[in-house]
Length: 144
Image 1 (cartoon, rainbow, N blue to C red):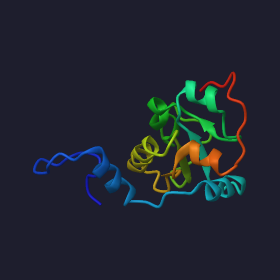
Image 2: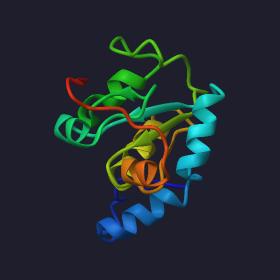
Image 3: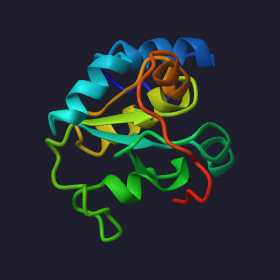
Image 4: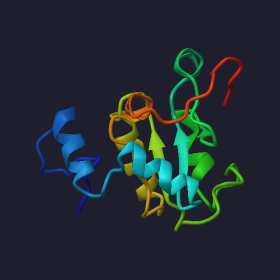
C-alpha cells in the first residue's frame, strides 16, 4: 500500500479527508454490532481512545480497554516495555474507538504500522455504539 500516512519526496500534500480515505482503504472497518459480537466472543479487544472528559460525559463501553490516544502505541505494542497486559501479540484483533470514528482510523493505521495487522476501528465511534443501543456504563470516576 505504500506510505499512506507520510509523504514521499515527490508526492503532493494531501488533506485530512484524502488521508482518511487512503488509510481506510487499507483495512475493513467494523460496525458497532459486529465489534460488540467480536468482543463478546473474545475475538477482539475494544480500545477506547477518547479523552477523559468525553468518557466522563458520555460513559464507557463495558470491557473496553481505556488508553488515551497519546499512549496507544506504547500500551499496545506487544514488544514494548510499557505494554498493557492485553497486548498479547501482533495477531491481536484491536478495534480502536474514538468519539465519532475519525481519530480512530489514524490510530488503527498507526497500530498496523507496529505490526498489529488486524487492527481496525469502529465506524462512527462511540456515538455510533451508543446509537445502536449497545451497552454503556457511567463514565463518572473513569480514568486511563
